Image (cartoon, rainbow, N blue to C red; front, side):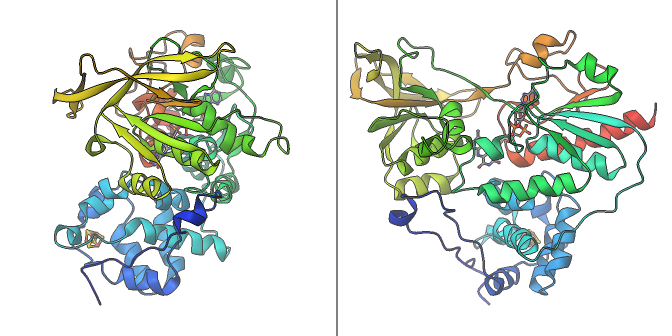
Length: 460
Ligand code: FAD
Ligand code: SF4
């Protein structure tokens, strides 16, 4: 057995995948998963587990894979993770479990994410539905606002503890960013739908098309008999660079662009009701996962796509793998460049993006070197469509309709270490409290909130 190198994962070739939305990364076959599992050292003090925000017993599930006992493996994973087909695909493992793996000190770390995905997909393909033992109903009701990973996780834990849980979701489909943000070539719709169905099978009810803060406010939820409320409303409010011309036609927020294509299938208009207007030359501004997803979606729609970032490739927060995939698919990159204004034609359609060159100065609060404009270096880029992907904040609808709910200047809901907000009986987690973070971090906070809610309602 070769401990040095991991079993490589196959991928669809770039020239093929750029024409469709099929999943790029192909999962391990059974034999490959077993071979990869054999590389694990079964450390006595597994560092990988310290890197896992939900505390999966990683060596134990890997040992089960090695022993070809996939039922045991899924049982172990599901003790701490209700959405393993999702996390096996989108978790930044390189910074978490795999980043901490002992084997990685000398060789390539164990491919923990690919093994997790293999086990979860195997269980789904073989109809193995591992459900934890559900406690008898305790007659207490909990309302959850938002069906993203934090809300789904919080709901699943509480249902297992015997609570009657209802998730209210404003969109017509459950899953949060998993459903509307992350494109299907990274996370297929069928995977998200199956994970949502699993959470429902635990007894969690999901009501779609309900905007809390408008249809009901939190006070009314309490009046309707809910003993506690969890806010998992995410960070879906796009930020703009605040430069002249940013309201011209053809300038989208990444959220709107991804929403139209991923959720509303606008690229298939008129077969689907929602249209999207997108020109030949597309520029995407930003450098995170949202940027890469937007750029790769636009590429799949057959456009020439350039990613513009004010720092260099080294500082890009997107997963390295996604940047590599984007390059293979033909994305262009312009580093150390920032937009200063947009200009349009007589119809108000964006045509020119005026940019300025940047240089890197001293590190800022984030530890990354601060970009500084180079005086007199302005230049113009011809553009037909611009997608702004420079970050998102939490929506303020609930804070605005809820007196006494404390928020920070950035709009995130203030919580203590038990995910309690400033209002008794109201808890919050995920991106709504941290700003945009990760799926697994959102799940971790959903789990913590469920534990807190259980303590709170048990003591009443
Ligand atoms: P969300 O997933 O945002 O879900 C919140 C839900 O609440 C939404 O469905 C929303 O409609 C609903 N809601 C909001 N307000 C209300 C209301 N008033 N009433 C009813 N419902 C409401 N993370 C990774 O780990 N890996 C990745 O590769 C990755 N890629 C990403 C790509 C994109 C394009 C985006 C946008 C994010 C990505 N992330 C990634 C981040 C990750 O998806 C989020 O951190 C995570 O989804 C946060 O989960 P959440 O439950 O807090 O909120
Ligand atoms: Fe296996 Fe790496 Fe975890 Fe050690 S740290 S148990 S080698 S996955």
